[in-house]
Image (tube, rainbow over all chains, first blue to last red; front, top):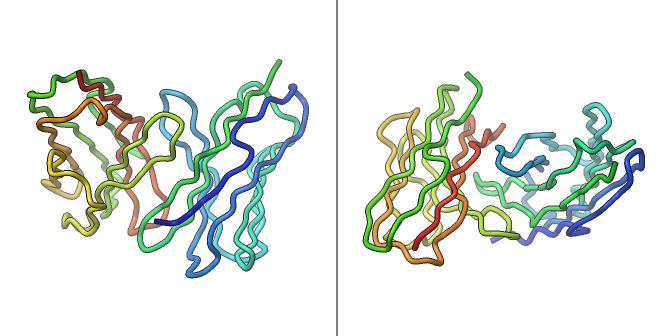
Length: 110
Length: 111
């Protein structure tokens, strides 16, 4: 079992605000880190797969950074919109498996 | 087709029933997974099939029985479940551990 922690557990922001969440994980035997966006009653949607220390990826208003030496990743959302409301899950890839964090539930208030 | 399809979306079953959950993908992925997710908890791995062979079984009770008839299909047979087995069951597939695609899940209620 891999200990993956995400913070905060939940977050309410006003429309237009920028926000970020943290994912921390054991840095040993690191292979890759996945970020998912999960809306209720839908499939988890893959956002990013990151492998290299210092990696930074961007998809529209969402970006993520990775530090494999210290075992953490940040997800940033710029100018949050109500449609960004979802649970954001990180999942380190270890031993041919994804180990999910508990997620950050984001609510964007119009 | 870039989706993982799970059926049924919802299932209510008694503790003496036998039912099956189904998962299908046509992306040519050779690894398929069952995850269980309880409310406010992260998805937890139950089974991994790689090239249609069970490669990981995370100490799941025998009342859950997986089956991979071919590279596109994954079933989860359920028998004599307990109310605490009520959860969302997610299926996923990947191309040998990279680029996972998830289904939308089956919401199971055991009464």
